[in-house]
Length: 302
Image (tube, rainbow, N blue to C red; front, side, top):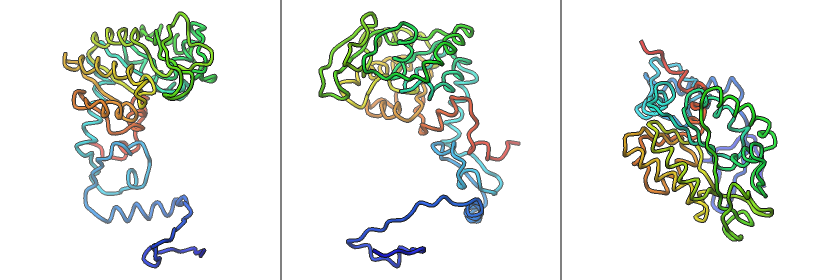
């Protein structure tokens, strides 16, 4: 083993060897130098990387060129989200998934200011159902910190006149994965002890479909179950089918990247949605009502 403070790949014979390098966070002076080096490479700056627009990196916010413009992809992303959030066709529905309520509280609070209907599914639905209905949830996900936020979410929904829908039946398993005992459960009986809910059932799919087909703007962030496993993908795929049908009927449908984007890609119907975002984190921050550093850094339109 050789140790060195300076390494040049050109000086190292890598055949049959490994190079272990420490990750060092650059200091502010180094970041400014790097941004200046990038700025020296051109006359105009065009940012077309929506997927990194929420990160304040040197290549995203540090370029001093003028003008600093949005590329066609970034423009398309911003146009779809701006129209949905600020001038939507109504009724407006948001479909939310995810594991923990407290991780999605900003998203939920922001969308409650804008939507007419909200569907909350995925792992965080079980925290709501335990708090609101005292439903047994077995080994399903429970967010203790998020449970304290449920009353304020429901109160805000009431004040805003937003109807929130939750799953009414479930696909449960005796273990996480596809090797356990898999069976159905209802809202009335709850999730049995020793079982974990990993998907929603046919009644939930029908409930969602009925509401989805009534809406003219649909924004979806988060699958409704462990959709990467075939045994627990039926619920999310049922939602996919309903949103595709609504889109054919004239609704504007937007998928917020990340896991949901991967879901519709696996289903082979990404082109059937109005827009599938290329940025998971960036789309989430837009839906939360945040400004994206990469957009703020662009030149003002004159």
